[in-house]
Amino acid sequence: MIATVLTWWAAITIIGWVSFPLTWRLFSRLPDRGFGLSRALGLLAAGYFLWMGSSLGFLRNNAAGAFGSILLLGVVSFYAARDNRQEILNWISKNLKLIVFVEILFMLAFALWAFVRANNPEIQHTEKPMELAFLNSILRSDVFPPRDPWLSGYAISYYYFGYVLLGMLAHLTGTAAGEAFNLGNALWFALVAVGAYSVLYNLLAHEGKKNRIIAPLIAPLFVLVVGNLEVIFELLHHLQIFWIRDADGQMTSAFWEWLNLGRLAQPPLGSPTWLPDRFLWWWQASRVVQDVNLAGVSTEMIDEFPFFSFLLADNHPHLLVLPFVLLTISFSFNLFLTKGSLSHRLGIVKKVKVNPCSAVGASCS
Image (cartoon, rainbow, N blue to C red; front, side, top):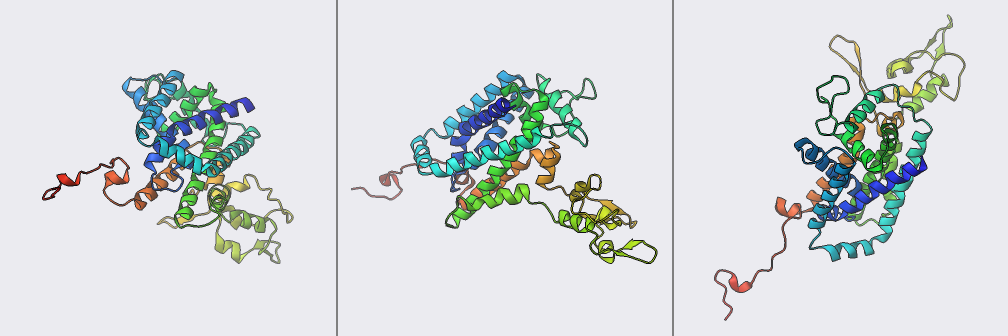
């Protein structure tokens, strides 16, 4: 297990460094030049090359195709940095402290969630079996679109690109689908950690804030760890606070009836306890938003937050997209900081030296 974790860490780290020149070019206005996002960008780009190549028949969806996609990413990245190599090296030299810090953050986040998944590796319940079926189907499809795991002769009719990214890493590392499922969950946790860190680092650095290397750690804390207040209400409910027992022995509460938070509106059972013991009590945290239809019937609303999703370990599209949402936010911030035309904003216009004597009406005599 440890060897597989290290292999995945090495694979995604190589992808990140291969894509960094491209990232450095695209995020030219950000103080960290997109370094914290280079893994996500590289994974997205290489996965897109594999997806399109396999869909058009230029690549096969296997280890060779995955490796070819990384090589293509390297070519694009090399071309993007062809005139800026010394600038990139100078930036790396000046920002070595930040680079080491981000690398350590990624490694710790990845190791932490790999440990969590290692202690709860079962791929069962909720939508995990379906997601594993998609991943297996993609791994067994030589070309895209991948085969539908239920309807023979048809392609998957669902959002499956996130599973292409997981499958590409599985091909590169020679990992079985079950291990790839759990390691992918840990990897995405780490990608979100460094992505959130990068967003706040750039905001603070742009404002000239001091101690900006440590302070942005609050971003992955709030994005990945902090949830909602349901657990506090869960504790109050199990301690039987705000409940009154009437003369008939029935427990009533105007507060809990007003709050109307799912099963917490029902009277608690047994004696007060500090540890919630109701079956699947933590599930309520993802159903705190209440709605009522036109008939006056309460309707369940799903409002998962990242910690719930990662702990549940449903590698569903809403989880797999998280690193790329942060990538999009950072790219939008980069565009916001850049003045001029769209070409200038994308960093694709080269500086051209103009001979003043060639200007209309200029005199060089």
